[in-house]
Image 1: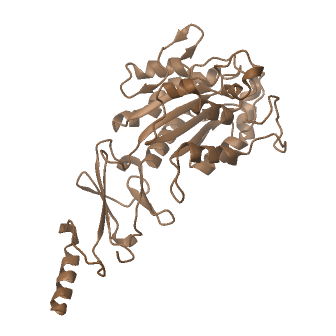
Image 2 (image 1 turned 45 degrees about the vertical axis):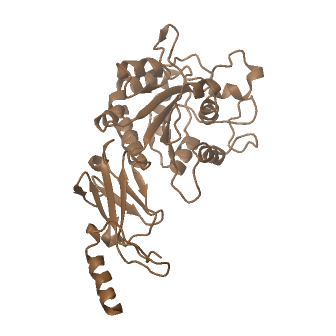
Image 3 (image 1 turned 180 degrees about the vertical axis):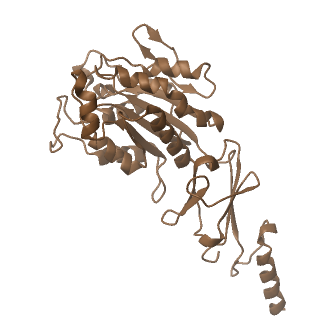
Length: 356
């Protein structure tokens, strides 16, 4: 009998794709292939996406704000194409004032913006159902140029994400990927005092790692899992861009800390001197890819990995397919292979070890 049972298990293993389950005794094991099935309607990605724009509202930013508005469609096109469920809000780089409320008359700097002056949209959180979305975003992102010249983007996004007013707008969703996009022509000097500290060696300067830890906690990241967020920056990345922009009488600074936080969180670094349309497309693609990453619960035999979306096999390709990261046991989609909002996603593989 045992010989026949062994043959039966082997034969069943060869027909793994047809099996939906099997009963096992306490001391048995299976060499059957695993199938991880991800449906958009389940708790698996593609996730919802919350996008927070942190826009410099100092005196030198009028042109950059206009460029973001003009090229917004380059950013939002693929969100619309795949029907992603997104929330989007805008804050400014002087939201850090909330950290020292007794020192400022205006204690609303950390709030979401719906425009400036007499031009307001009345909508603080935009989504895929927002009428005239492009026009709404254009109004909201033009936050003006009368803000504080002490631009502290990092502390501003921290204060804004914790603002009671912003929380009441239901921007942040726990099951969503959080994408922060900083647009500034200055460096971040977030520090523990009200005074401007433009010194990387100052003991008052808050380390970049502090804000990464904050985002880990804020997004409820679990140990040994991928970040559920990214920080992207459109800023001054080198001396050539710094010189190019500084011909209008305003001094700019190279954004070393922005670049550092982007590197630490898988974000995109875009130059204020580059084509805004291309930069926004890159950021959009990066957000969609990061939000479409799937972490397997078993280590696969890499040669057996097969990815199927809506019944079609997706190629293993870094441009328009999927790639596998063995360090994190994660499958990530790229380019045109990024699945749509209602896609049925299956990742099939043979496990490296037996399931006991």
